[in-house]
Image 1 (cartoon, rainbow, N blue to C red):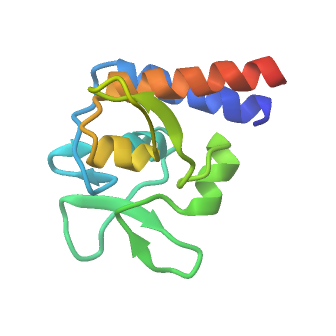
Image 2: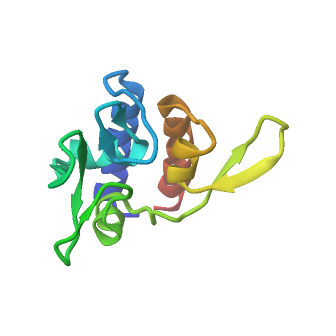
Length: 131
């Protein structure tokens, strides 16, 4: 990760902890709120309304198609230094070590934005030790 990517993730962590975002699942942004990845996209100003559903926002992919479930892969990696499918370590309810992608933590594991921010912060701390 480069310095800009680390700063972008720190800004994202701050927003996840701010309490300004309602959390939802399975969409970057819907009338119910944002997933953790949707917050990252919104603070960079790249979400756009769906051409088919007024209450959904997503990204226009390089091929011109609309995607509301995940950000455009290369854009996300370039801006945040994180692969969308990268697995992050966490300790589950049974004190077992597990790994899940950020979208899985948000959509399936029931992590709150604060808990996802904790995972990201740990990742950033490891990155800063390396750089």
